[in-house]
Length: 117
Image (cartoon, one colour):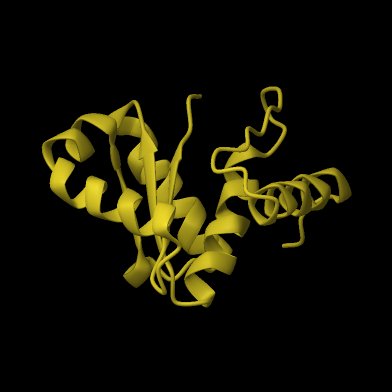
């Protein structure tokens, strides 16, 4: 299923912001605007390139919802972790290593994204 034009534009604006050196661009949409599919598209492109994605949510119910969306969208889940913020906090060493590689622009960067729904 293709993105709607405004969703595609947001994906491209986000990619441009990353290219310009912004590390935490913010996407703002109202309810039903397609935040999950936008992030799924970004994750799909990222995992297609063999890079890792960590997607953090603040409620347990959202974990399976996002996983289903990512799978439906074609995200390679071998390169993607979806978990609650609390779970990530318990795995802080892994998160710190991921953020370190991202900041250093190593050959194996990953994206750390938090969605507050």
